[in-house]
View 1 (cartoon, rainbow, N blue to C red):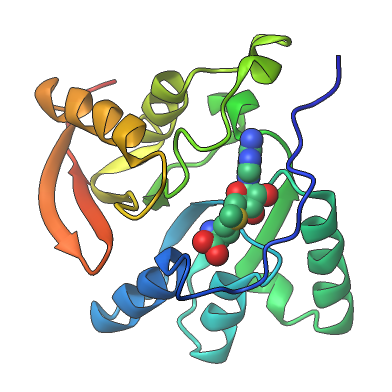
View 2 (view 1 turned 90 degrees about the vertical axis):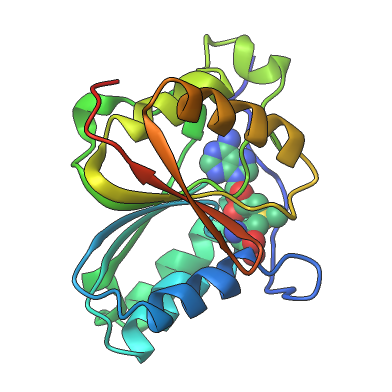
Length: 191
Ligand SMILES: C[S@@+](CC[C@H](N)C(=O)[O-])C[C@H]1O[C@@H](n2cnc3c(N)ncnc32)[C@H](O)[C@@H]1O
């Protein structure tokens, strides 16, 4: 048994997968500054971190990647540009092994890739289900905070099932769609 890593490297391909670019647009359009953001799937481009630094948004972003190549790129980036490391921390791991005890309360959580990578390989070591992982992160999002999904995902049917269930339970409140990103507000209901 080995960790279910993602043994690929995703460079920015906005035409194919615009979620991160659309999220950057949303941050700028809404004037989102100084917030704590959790980001599922950094990509090897690390766009969110670079955009945060370039635009001086002052957000604090924690990104996760399961790609050894992508985390190596992050290591190189912050080594060569330590300023980037203030607002952008990336870590290597399987999101289905998240532990709520180690997470702060976020203002914003991106869940663009729910359902895309969860297989029986995660089951082998008791990985969270998609539902459990989303609930865990909803539990670490402040009331009034934002959770963003990605309607262009090839697994959006699975993601939609999860967010619809959380809406039905009153944990999330639909707040429309920004470009390709269905947006939800975290209610004050405990998870
Ligand atoms: C197709 S890339 C997309 C990257 C970026 N969000 C974009 O749209 O350009 C998928 C991302 O999800 C990450 N990923 C895949 N499985 C994961 C897992 N189990 N836990 C955490 N991240 C994972 C990959 O490492 C990669 O960064």
